[in-house]
Amino acid sequence: MSETVTMPATRAGVAIECRDVTVRFSSDRGSVTALANVSVTLAEGGFLTLLGPSGCGKSTLLRVIADIVQPVAGSVTVLGQTPAKARRDRQIGFVFQDAALLPWRDAIGNVRLPLEVGGRRTLPPGAPGPQELLDLVGLSGWEKALPHELSGGMRQRVAIARALLGGPRILLMDEPFGALDEITRDRLNEELLRIWRDTATTIVFVTHSIYEAAFLGQQVLMLAARPGRVRELVPVNLPEPRQLSVRETPGFAALAAHLRAVLETC
Amino acid sequence: MSVTLASASAGKAGPAAEDDLDAAWREAQRRLRLRRRMLPLAGGAGLLFIWWALIAVFHVRPFIAPSPEVVAITLWQKFPMLMANLLPTAIEAVCGFLLGNLTAIVIATVFVHRKTMEEAFFPIAVLVNSIPVVAKAPILILLLGNGLAPKIAIAAIVCLFPTLVNMVRGLEAASPQAMELMHVLSASKREVFIRLRLPTSVPYLFSALKIAASTSVVGAIVGEWIGSQEGIGALIIQATYNFDSALLYATVLCGSCFSVLFFLTIRLLERVVISWQPDVTNL
Image (cartoon, rainbow over all chains, first blue to last red; front, side):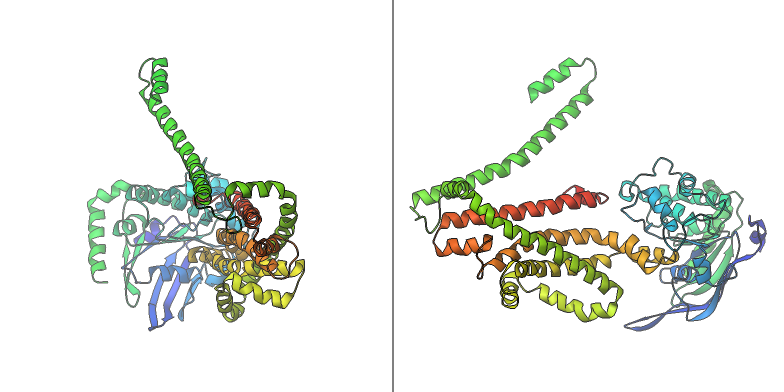
């Protein structure tokens, strides 16, 4: 695919490979198949968005890659290792929908958390520290602010800075801007693309917004529901570096229309 | 108020309307605060007057109910004796409070880490918690006999269950996403406990401690009801048997003053410890 070539990847390695991943959850009403034979490969430095109706297993797929959920069948490799190894090596950063900040810690204290647990006390050489990451996400001067003193958008910025601490090569984002207003969401979308270009991190981004999926992704993986399965992998060919104005172009409109059409069959 | 407003606006030439608005708002806030403080005082004074009037008008005899001024005089004259009896009760209550809550925190920690223990004993703890203090206390007195220690034990056991129930809830109250975050960061069980579970449980702990502050005093007093020679509980029983209503009221007043002070101390501590939570500081 052509976008694989245009990706700013320094190493053309495979970041994430899922092969025939099946996940089943047991409940009182019997077991539910959340994912059925999902296969996807993502090159290092890529930006993949996961789009699909609710219940299609987008978040589950993200949690399989992060070693939070174990598949019953299939294999997952992250940077050529098992997800558990990649997690223990701190190669995976995760951003949750509700920011999941610790309310008793100030902004910089929250960003520093990864250095206080999991046997990591120091940053790898060259990796940016908590202060630099807060600067990167545009929160200079807010170091001492407690989460309840920050707006929803600012809390997500702190969560992104925390996920980036230690320089993980993979960033997994689970509808991080889903609860934000449209103006804040637009601004953060643009900033996320800037951070992605600056850090050369591989990003997998779950969303239920067609526009977000098309604007951010180099590829859009569309999942169908019940059971969650791959519907289509849509390549995105938009002029780089992308700006919000790209959404007014005919190319973007055609892409969004295609995504919507596929979504209706999911 | 209109006078001060007029003079303020006269003092400033030009468009000082905004300053005037600010000043008016501050004045309104000040009056609101004053009102909030004065009204309960006025209410209390009114009730005292009604109490006094009822006793005077209906000629209620002193062994049935005392007049407020007699209670005040008793409080003044027997103050050293009252304090001498408050001291053991206070020691029992505070020691019981510390012992009971500490035990509850330890048991809650065990429960959270050993699910089998929780499944076996937590429902029983909830059941015991639903038994009223006055029903539990006599059983414990029979078990533990007389002296200072059994009263401490009673106060401790009375505190233990509400704190245990709340603490278990608090330790398990961390959001699923925060738990997942800790997993992604490969945090150990110990780190999850110290960095996430324990801080999350603090607001739950304090709402239990505030209940425990008053129940520990109740526990100590009820413990002194049977066969005790000193303490607020013993004095209550003595005064009742002697129809000394003035002493009874003064004793009850001493006990509740201590209880309120204890409660306020815990609330002050809560404000200091949970300064990060916006809604607590506004209480």
